[in-house]
Image 1 (cartoon, protein in one colour):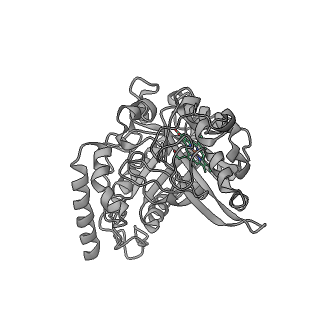
Image 2 (tube, helix red, strand yellow; image 1 turned 180 degrees about the vertical axis):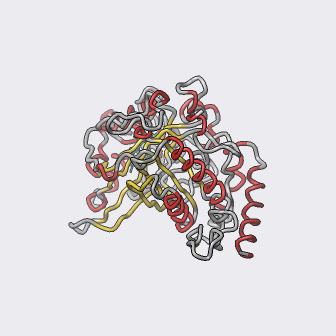
Image 3 (cartoon, rainbow, N blue to C red; image 1 turned 60 degrees about the vertical axis):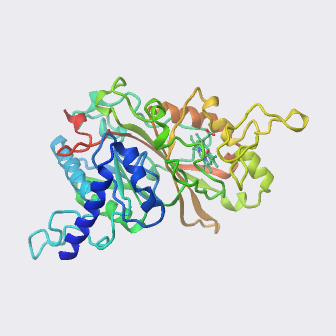
Length: 417
Ligand code: HEM
């Protein structure tokens, strides 16, 4: 208990420091040193204008979970669950154990309230981000169990089928989701484990995904990491410092419909298997042509350095475009997609191997955008992407991510108002 008290005080102190800065982006900058350096002691504020875990500098580890709500849950029960999740998340993100006092829940016979594996570990930059899937508003039979059908965002539909999709239902969908990101995998797993445990009897895990090695930068203060194809990933991503572009591209605005989602965003999750054994047999020049950037520096093939703007008009020998017409970065670029951008926040994964002895590896793609249409436009454009020969989309889900939580409220409270 004494140890828990100390841990709590230390973590809370760090949080106060971060919370003193106005807004998520500034708070994030205040803690990047510790998080980026692997110190792990930083804590991001849970309460704020937006949920943490979006523009927060992408942590190194992920545990993502999608839940189905129980058929016996009613509106009151759902509100209770969201309230308990909020209370627990507010504590966990500050490095505290699940419930006040921690150890036994007040009885010698009851199991400990917190499962314990994060005792002694700092907050490790943990963020917990909640989302609501289409099934929360109307279930598969069309029933409106929670009285929310009329408040469903019109755009919150399961994503359309894209060319090449090989989706597995058991890795797709979900009524609720929780994204837990941290710089220590044990801290992220502890969060999902305890939040799942709190949900017992009310919501059960449908699928979940561990991720290591962020595949994006969400702050200009971060160095660009690499994905499992060995390329820098996140160079041209939207970042915390992008100011009004975030309002335009990431945050649902008060003028958008529905109003309860203002300050929130839409989250798309795609489990993308990468056939890395085949990729590893491809020559460097071909790999670079498929991506449209150099592998070492990450510079556009039209020239310059990593952060130079790609010049899609530039041509080389025999008037061939320097950035191929089917290169990933050309097709994904906002100039090919009516201005649509997104904030990418994905992770590498390796989940053992398949029966052919190939690593079950890939990129767990996560993106936040103001409307799902932005993702749909880019993914549709990527139908011509030369990388597709080495990719297989096997999981897909979409969630409406409510705006930030105010102290004393529960996540998504405006939806129930
Ligand atoms: C950029 C890899 C899937 C959207 C990039 C870059 C790489 C990359 C290496 C260049 C560096 C950067 O700007 O971040 C991959 C791989 C994928 C994948 C390996 C699959 C395993 C996707 C998907 C989408 C997407 C599914 C969205 C539907 C983008 C966007 C950019 C980008 C918007 C920035 C383009 C720009 O403005 O220059 N990706 N990507 N990517 N990717 Fe992907």
